[in-house]
Image 1 (cartoon, rainbow, N blue to C red):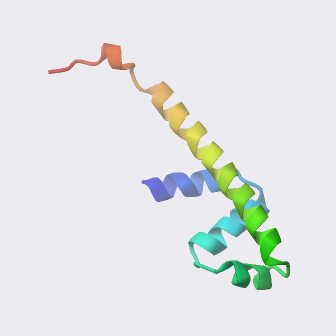
Image 2 (cartoon, helix red, strand yellow; image 1 turned 135 degrees about the horizontal axis):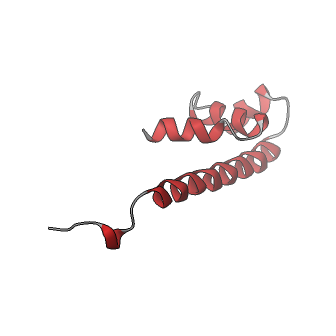
Amino acid sequence: MLEAVIERCMQTMTPEHSQLIRLKWKRQLSYRELAQTLDTTEPIIRQKLHRARLSLLRKLALFWDEQLAREPSAKHRVHG
């Protein structure tokens, strides 16, 4: 389920951020390999990947907040 949620959130990201995360996460490319693949430098890749991860984290937090808002509040649940 978590992977499906991550994929869903990644679909709402910029293509560049989504691509970076896919290459790093799915293909397990190093920073050097990412830089070579995308014809840029390692420091640029590190910076962009950091921003992409922050973007994904924000989207995941928003997703979970929305999921929790849909659930009945804890005070209305029956315990026992």
